[in-house]
Length: 197
Ligand SMILES: Nc1ncnc2c1ncn2[C@@H]1O[C@H](COP(=O)(O)OP(=O)(O)OP(=O)(O)O)[C@@H](O)[C@H]1O
Ligand SMILES: Nc1ccn([C@@H]2O[C@H](COP(=O)(O)O)[C@@H](O)[C@H]2O)c(=O)n1
Ligand SMILES: [Mg+2]
Image (cartoon, rainbow, N blue to C red; front, top):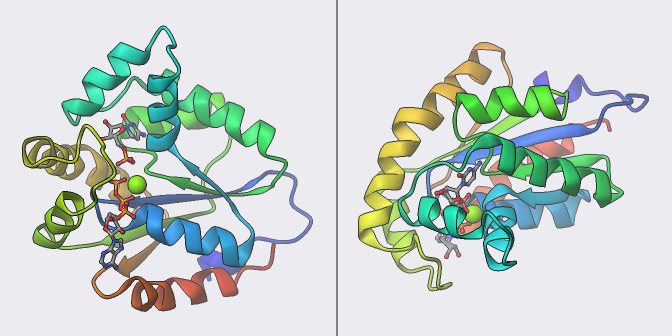
């Protein structure tokens, strides 16, 4: 029901928040959803990494926070998302890895002014997430066992309560993230196939 409530004459953008622990497969699945259903894929982590590499005034701070597995101040992340939403030319968005905490959630509502239509939650056992992250090999400063342990703690302490918040509003689609990439995508497909946007 939650996914079919959207109608074709809406004015607001259609927002999907994509959540799950580090290495649960959010980015991998977002690429497939975006290709199949023509959503714009905005990864909060990717936007922060781009900002970090662009010699911006916040670059060093962002680097240090990511290396520690902590959460960047919401104003920075939400403003990067806001700009990306407005320049995308699309009206359907996958916002990957956001909101990570209550502060992120509230800042998005305040600055962007909309709530998500649906929240996808990739539910994955910790051992599997650790294995995936340590095999990722993309040169990320946070893909090491020390940072990964911290990220898992931050996920449980700060991100799970956000997922609970949206669950209570009936917005969460929980997907079992165990299985091959294609097996997981098979579970995601019906969520988006049911949309009328
Ligand atoms: N279903 C899967 N089975 C096995 N490996 C997977 C699966 N999905 C993704 N992977 C691999 O696991 C790693 C982590 O996946 P991905 O980057 O999509 O996770 P993420 O949730 O976006 O993580 P992060 O929060 O750290 O950005 C990648 O190397 C990816 O190729
Ligand atoms: N809303 C967010 C999203 C990410 N971060 C920081 O970036 C790191 C990597 O994020 P991924 O989504 O690519 O896993 C994350 O551990 C945070 O340090 C953030 O602060 N706020
Ligand atoms: Mg990712």
